[in-house]
Length: 220
Image (cartoon, rainbow, N blue to C red):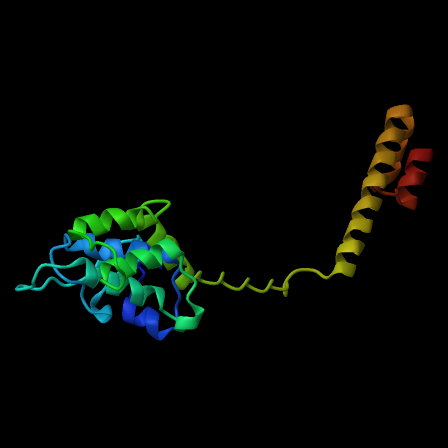
């Protein structure tokens, strides 16, 4: 299955104890917010779908109220806590300070708008959010490679001459070749011998033998 066809929800990731790096959590927060234009609060985790190409998909509410930086700071905090206890969180101090400021937990001016909060989050990305999410998906859902088909067993030959028969046929062919070469050489060096041999090998002609009466007549 191709990477662009893989998908899972944030709820699935949480159920499988998946973890996110701080950059991945920031990238997902920004992707969700920009998907709906920062115009409404983020959906529940079971409704947020992450795809292998780094995009996110979520339903749009028909009568949603405008979003606030605090709501997206809550989402970012939940993403950072995926698969970890609070004691195990390893989050850069500046990012924790930004979350606390958006949630009104420290004595610093709150963000004036969601866009101002977005600009503060972008500084924690080293590359586009879709690239960060796509690389995370490759870690969460490794591509399944179909195993190669098993090699077909080699078929043993069941027809044709056996090895010993082949050797015998080869020996006979060699002997015939040597005999033919010897005859050709003899004929080329002694033509008369060849003719005599041919005469000897020819079938003798049958000559009729005259009878006794015929011999006496001829002797007169």
